[in-house]
Amino acid sequence: MPKIEIQNYDNGKALFIDGEVFDWNIDILEIEKAHQTCKDPAFRRALHAKIQNHFLMCFETFIGKRYSLNEIVEAIEKGEI
Image (cartoon, rainbow, N blue to C red; front, side, top):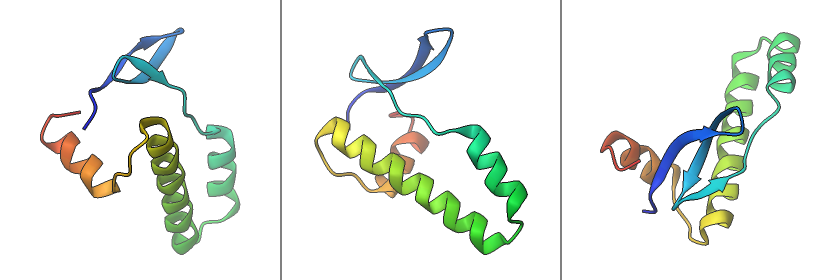
């Protein structure tokens, strides 16, 4: 697993992977709008899953290696990230 840290960056916080900024974000206003528009729990779970999958795809592309979401979560829980 690469070294992953959250550091101050550009008037905020950013995720750094092996010292390089991982420039990934989502439009929070769009997410809030989607939550206000649809209160259906199944829709919200699907939206959350899409965000997770998008993050994972971008992360893997950035790293150049495949990881499962569980591997990332386990690394966080172990303090490796």
